[in-house]
Image (cartoon, rainbow, N blue to C red; front, top):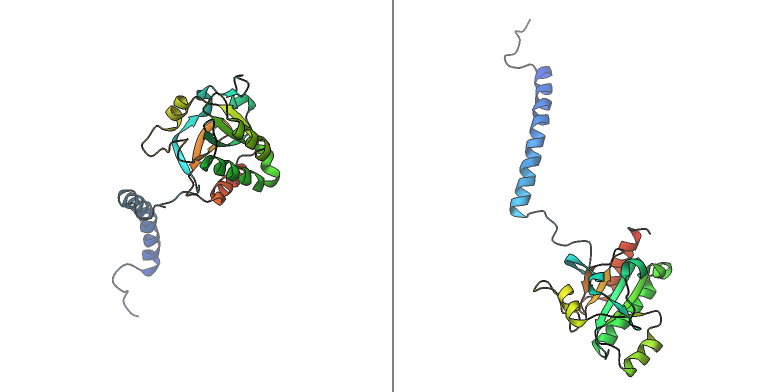
Length: 207
C-alpha cells in the first residue's frame, strides 16, 4: 500500500480555489474600474447623439416669446412635443433660408411622426421684411414665426465660449417636450444627423 501523498488532497484544493476566486473577483473589478477612471482607457469618446448638447439645457420660455400679432406665446402650452428652431432677423436670406429649408426637409423625413414635431423661426426684429414674409408664406408652410428679443436670445443661448451665436452661426436647435433647448447643429453637421437624433428621441420618448 502506497503512503499518502504529502500536501493538500486534490478534492480539497479545488473548493478552496473556487472560494479564493469568489473573494478575488470583486477586488479585481474595483481595481479595473479605478484604472479606467484614472486613465480614461476604455471610456467611449463619443456619445450616441450626433448634434452638440447644450450644457446646461436652456428653457425657451425664458425668452417671453410673442406671436407675430404681439400676443404672448408659451411653449409649455402651445408647442409640439419636440421643436426644430432657426433664429434670424427681419431679413432672412442666405444661410438663414438654407437652414430653414434643411429644417423643413428634416421634418418631412419623419413620416408619420411629423405631427410630434414643429418648426419655429425666431424673429429678433419687430417684423420681417416683405420679401422674407412672402418667402416664408410660399416656401415654409407649417412654420411658426415667433418674436424673440435679440439680446435675450443671445443671453439665453450663449452662456459659454463654445456656444454658437444663434444668428450668425446658422445653428439649428432642438427643443424637447418641456421646452428646453437641448442640442444644436451647425452647417458642418449633415442633415442626416438631425434626422437620426430626432428619430431616436421620438422612438424613446412616447407622448
